[in-house]
Image (cartoon, rainbow, N blue to C red; front, top):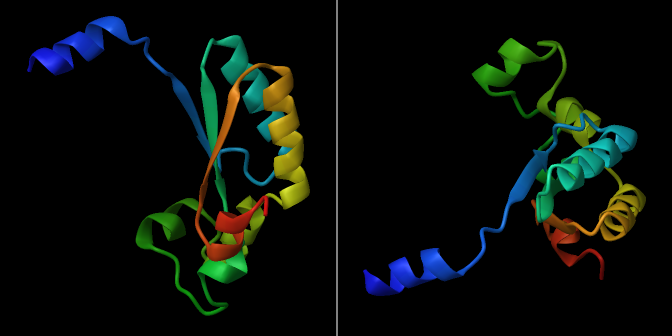
Length: 118
């Protein structure tokens, strides 16, 4: 317990703003989120990197909560594609993070995204 107490009392808190896919596939909104996270003093902002077609098939069914909050006629693939950002978009986000002195983090969800930037 002493070690935990020493860490808590001596190390600064590292704040990560969770952006996830809350940009709704809009890179301009994602850039605004970087600005907002930096302005509030966050140390990092975390996104999700994925290629929808690498995650689900065209016939994948949405989860119940997804059907309740999105167009029920839309497939899970279509829904995920609408949330997807491209690698050029992520390069812009990384540049904005560097300019705003905030760390860029992204959770990869498929092998291609894991290898980027490769």
